[in-house]
Length: 292
Image 1 (cartoon, helix red, strand yellow):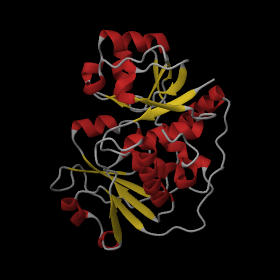
Image 2: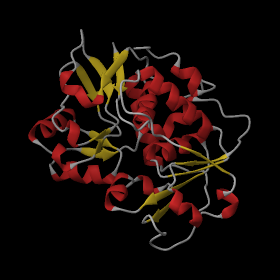
Image 3: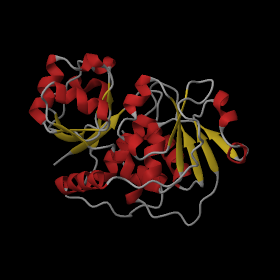
């Protein structure tokens, strides 16, 4: 029975973090399907694919072909254009739909589609890796420079700045995974992480890395993080200063709600796999994946 994970051409390696989360869970990975061209996929036989990604206007017509057997766990409806006849029919044929945010959950239920809050697969990546022997470094991942002044000096002065951004273009998927692995291994062994990136913060949960989300509090971001804001420590700002009630939240380890753990365990049962430590690093794991 063949399995594939998503490939990407975007500048955000957070997309690739989600693909690696699916690759860790699946019994094997036989290949890749481009998330943004699911309507063009033609394979010799259908592949099972976990649809754990952000879907938006650029792919609002890209309903998967019959070459894709979709499993919806951690999907996000990024734009209202996605709520069209083709996608609604697709979700009805695949319900219940596991979504990663409460905004997507509300949208689907308004269209009488059975759905549930699954959270994102990246939250459990840490289960597949041996715990680090030591932790080193405080890392800011895409924290806006203008907002650093509001972070306590003892954190700010020690911080190393890194980014999830990469050049958009024709880089091979394995090279994207190698770049992503470097970032994930860094935060997996970090002392603390401060980030605006959902797919930096959620892996930190499974890595037991203390984390604080430092995020622009616009409506789009609040929708994307809805659900995760129940357990992630979060500080909102407006690009110039903190908003809401200002109180810095020290990076901390996170405990997940029990219902999320139970839904993930059911997904493991569905694929007949176990989430147990097998790898010493993401760099090691990535080299087991298909090279094209």
